Picture 1 (tube, rainbow, N blue to C red):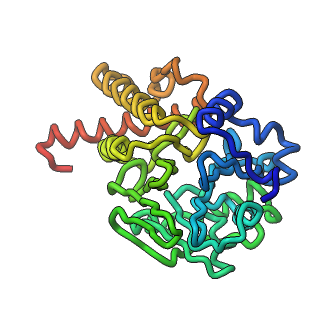
Picture 2: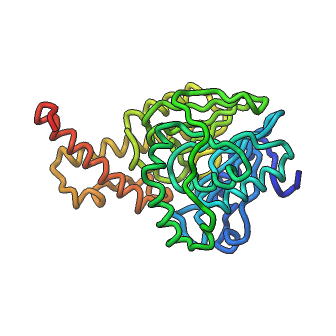
Length: 328
């Protein structure tokens, strides 16, 4: 293993270091343009490749989502694959720096662009891609459009060879993967942060990859969500008793991240319900939805304002349906 490929530190030291400087692996555009970040070993055999802060840009090459992998005695599972074929190849290269063991599968946790499109690099090598069935359906329904937009935003060179993946293995219910030589749980509770979004738990170390369910230091995006299902899913994550969490975006974190994400969702729900009750106009909702304690989170000025409008409209629609006796 290359000494620069992974940095094995005690768990609390890793969490403290990443929390203090969560975007250090991407300290500037020049670093982003040079290479993928090195894999960080957060627990024995469990690695993450951190993404950058912000939205996809040519400067960060769209590398904003976290990915990772788990090394067992018989092989490797990769988790989320980046925004392009190039990023999928970089993830495979990072795995090869750590271990010569074969990559058995790639698991995609949810249908957001910065986690999906690197899958082609795995399939080109005969490595199967596994997804929850509802998540795969959402990806198929919209991600060709995402890909066209990314080609415009990031450039044809960055996205060359990238295509919407077709998963090789679909599943519906929570399942356990045994092929690595260490058990890995794929947990789904239906429609939560998105249709079929899953979390991935390495049972041996209680390391949890949160996917779309958990972000650290970044506003959670409710666009694809059912909030009641999201709350149920977060309760389900607590029952797994994770020791360390790799979120979809942001730094590796302690299990208290589950509560942090849930508090934001609850605060948002209370604020939008109050605005609806007070008769606030939709045009006023983004400005009226200020939640000062989250102003420092990534994408506060974009995703939070959009969340506010989305939830306000949902609540308004529910109110109208209720007033009509349940008839749309």
